[in-house]
Length: 247
Image 1 (cartoon, rainbow, N blue to C red):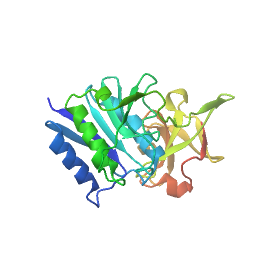
Image 2: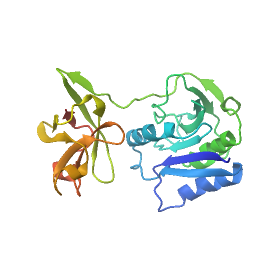
Image 3: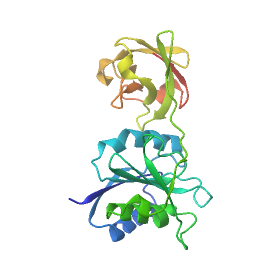
Image 4: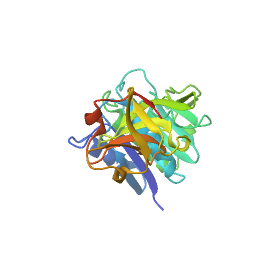
């Protein structure tokens, strides 16, 4: 079975950048299945990339190599990393992208090859490392071990007198407000407030309200989400990442 290499970047698809990274992987890795998680992370938005990656990586089988590059500090003194945990492998800049990995994950710092473009480490540093991991090279053979990777975990919700208080941590392409409030701990029908205003009772899915109405529900990621049926909650409610939610 070929190795799986996933790609998650903020490169978009209008330019050649994703193609150049995939070309390195195709040239240097043994036959591998390349899976694009997304290339539409907002430019430089490490927090959005963290959220997306935290939803996805653990769903892949053992042996998968994850290439994660949202790198506003490319070419600076920030380290390049490879990591291993739960039988999976990871390559990313040391800027918090891998904060969702468990505490027992093992990290190495990768050397930057002479001649690597200082503005394109995805192609010249991370992709070759991912290819070597897919070929069976152990992370310890790629760099030196470190114990202090940058970790910037996403904020956690808290209980306040029986009410969960959290915030919007991501907005998807539909304008749905995804929060950090654990859906399994909120009772069906609970009143959901955002930015101080009540918006909805907790429902099951979009179809539980008429078109154009706001609906709160437990999303596929397991947390409370707020949407507008056939519309954008972000636009209708005029709120964004960081706004408070109570449920």
